[in-house]
Image 1 (cartoon, rainbow, N blue to C red):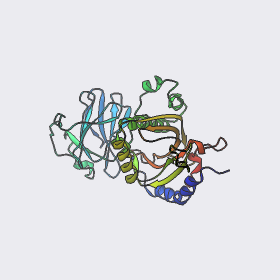
Image 2 (cartoon, rainbow, N blue to C red):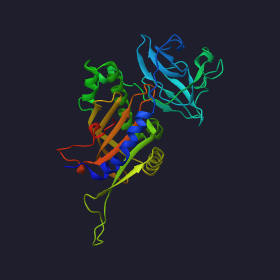
Image 3 (cartoon, rainbow, N blue to C red):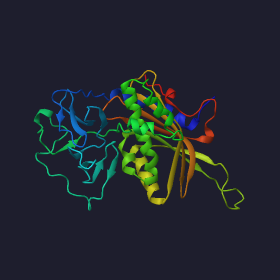
Image 4 (cartoon, rainbow, N blue to C red):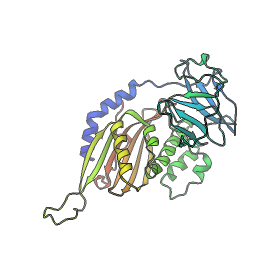
Length: 344
């Protein structure tokens, strides 16, 4: 038996390219060292610049006990070096937009016209390409490096998750103590992202949706097309056909932005959530979930699949996103999952 042929035939043409992209992009090691840039604990949290073997810096937040809380989830921005009132301020270099990162790593953009000025700078801002030894440790702000997904949800948040929550079973795995540290941390990142994803559609937070996709992501989207009846009597036929399109990240975000602008209401609900670790390639994960999407003008019910790459610890990315209508998924094979991808 075959799975959804339009999707898999498209994937057959591009999976070789995905494998090449995954293996040719070098993973960066971010070790701790005596050269790490520390800015002191404030409000129980500390921003630390981890310096790798090439002198590049990745910014991470630790708690007062030295436990890693999350990696800084913004790119190419000016970053305050301490939390103030539970928030870490940043300003995007390219756009000038400002925002805050909360204690769990979640981003909120602010109204620049109403925002208080960024804290005064005591030294030159840091460029991400400047060797660490040339950086001034007393700088009040620093340029953050590449985008990352946040480590996110705390143990207390995971424990308080209701059984009805679609992420409950995966949260229980993280808390079970049966996972190794890196596996548990990666699953937290995925849980945090998907928790935010669930609300990002409802709040039309296009900035969040833009963050985590690779610039070369392969995105397959589908639309259910309702055909008019042949007799011209009006109304729409039940069911309908499905059209599939392969989009670049830029095209996907652009179309999503237009959909946000055109609809006053968008509701998204998740179920059947599952995280699968690739059986042979370390750092590669697949995420499957069922998504019920409703807006003013359109609705569908289908399965999403996301292919995650954690081989660069400072910059987890989604390389593949596919969608299948629920009506096309049979009980024998189920929706697309990580086992459908041969990355070796």
